[in-house]
Image (cartoon, rainbow, N blue to C red; front, side, top):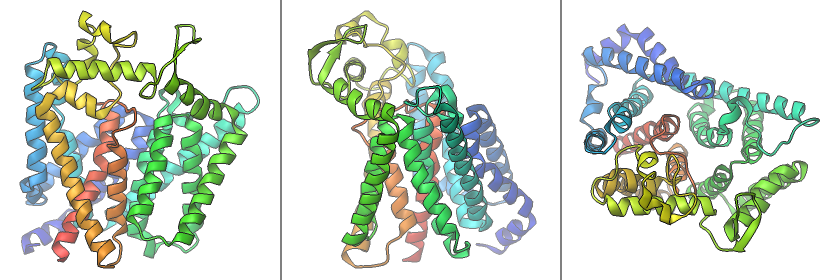
Length: 427
């Protein structure tokens, strides 16, 4: 860092403190409401542009990954402008650049402002504890008078608590690893409490994709980290114990997670919910119809797709009725099919290029830490875990271009780029 930049950093400690608090509040704001989150992101961009004016953080604009993202954003705008429903599409793609800003602001703060790591850790810890304790209160109240098949906590009717926990816990663990040496030794009990009840909350949420992905995430942790066979057995026993205890204490979860899932995989139902015939589905008849409509949409709009968030409009056309009775919905419920149907082959190439970038870095990670016996970089490993979980292809998903979910997807990328840059500079 140049002398000028060191002086500038010293001149604006309050700006860096404020920016750190704003970014750190994003997970909590996602619990309260997306409008507050968007306001926080907008405010953080304004603060960051001020720092850019002072000569700070400008280098991140020159990074290849950021330029690649901007090119992707420009393509999304192009796809929207040439879609049939321009207004619906352009309002999402035009300001998509804000997620790129979110990534480089996190990267900048991690690299240049040491207090950011502890500020973010403290706030995300409080956020997760609030979610856990409110849910425990909800369970206590519901025990006597309501069904407990979908415990949603502070998220209410949105039913996204499992997704929130699934995607914030890895960030919490990364920040814990950053601050581990400076924490009270008794914090390990808080850590065990948070991790244990987080898994319970995911199970109680009834969100089958989140439950499945949580087990995928646990498997990936075993893969990326160095655990001996004894520790793996202990962890597996503990996880299975929590799963069995949750299912046994809450039969409604057992019905939704196991029985209903089995039926939807292997049976077709009429509008009254009665079994009509045996038939193997990709998750369910509804999901399969959504997927097939998306694939048909891609075939009809091979190059550029139908435009961001235009699946909901395109599927209303008569041609898609041949797919089945669940042919039309807001999005195809699979990230890969949504990218194909809404952004076409060109957009899919952008998306898969990012995944190839991730897999090449995972290959390098495995080569270094598995073959040479070097110490495992746990924060980097956790970054790989959450990104692979976020983009695991074989589960139903929310809309890729949903603002809430997009923020959850982009948050860990800032940590990933910081870790990769740190690794590169340490060579």
